[in-house]
Length: 375
Ligand SMILES: [Zn+2]
Image (cartoon, rainbow, N blue to C red; front, top):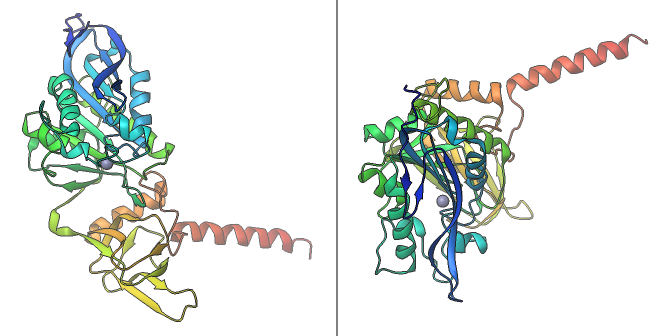
């Protein structure tokens, strides 16, 4: 890599010079009061030329883990150390963010079905158009941070069109372990950007309305790896994750509730359900009626309900099929790192892993030996 300062200016409708970091509030629309809707943007333009990458968050206004990721990226990286440009789009859906809502408020427009946007379209499409034209279309690659929707929890995973080699390269550089493969819906930002030659992935992590620092730290480490892989920063990197499970559309299933009542999960301590065995038991208050919900196949739980009370048809778990090899790796990851780095599985049937049970037994034994010394 050349050390000469050959960076180029980054242009949105103003210009950020090489070696400059600029924080701006950029107008993307107007509110009911006629005042501007502005999104916070940080542009870190390296002194040397290189790829331009955008990182974005709060496309859905109540999904806030990514907002912390983007804030930290904007703070941590210095233009003097970059070959290329990092464009931080801190909060894409500012009206939703203000209202703690997923959609653009009042008419419930999904900003993430509004891309690439249009000048004469509805309010969502107009906002999307400004964001897309000014910032996203100026970049080479992108990572868009989401969480599960309200009332659900999700494992840390990536959504990407793995049939596109350029997108797969971004997913791998982000060290994506679990990837839900697919192009995404019409109007989705990552789909539109990827189709236009800006390979973009979506990262899903944790719960809406929550700040989960462990997941944020994992995201920051993986982004650092991605920046190094693409030569934006000068550091060591891995080219692909240690473990990867790419999930096709036919290999996943939403398991839904068959009755109203209280859910007791029957799986754990690993986030795995087994074919034909109980995922959960749903019971009424008197435990007179109990419904067992069985797993249709052996699978990894990538998402689940956040609430223990349910009605027929509500989602209990989102499961992707796995083979024996996958199972071994997943159990190893949990044994070694616990759940914290993959998601928030604080709610499950069994909580201690076999490894933890051995440790507990050892502690109990040595405590018994100490106590025995007085006898
Ligand atoms: Zn989202």
